[in-house]
Image 1 (tube, rainbow, N blue to C red):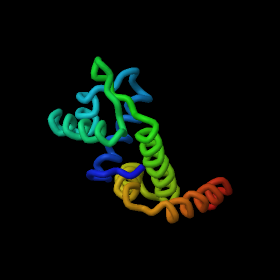
Image 2: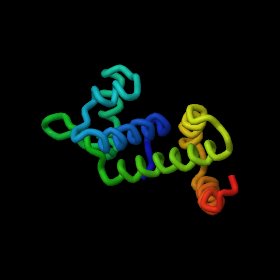
Image 3: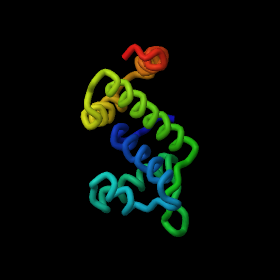
Image 4: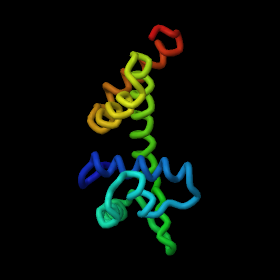
Length: 130
């Protein structure tokens, strides 16, 4: 599944929905707006596009749920974010900078490069080489 409109923005929304759903039993547009610092109308437009793309569903109570495709994308983005943040911190980067840089890179790095970084980090972080 590919994201049709604004891939970086859509990935950020999906990742936010995933993280909110781990902290809260129900996710609403207002939760996403608060978490991301976006206006409610902007979030509503994004939710409409993601529903059209089959990435989320909304029930009668306006609770937002990730579809299988939406969850797969969100988990992939979150994995990239987590691995890159951890690697940058092990390299001596401050937590705040590591988070910010990981957030930027996670949307643009190729799968091939990410897989190589993940493999390298997992091997070397376990051995304490960093």
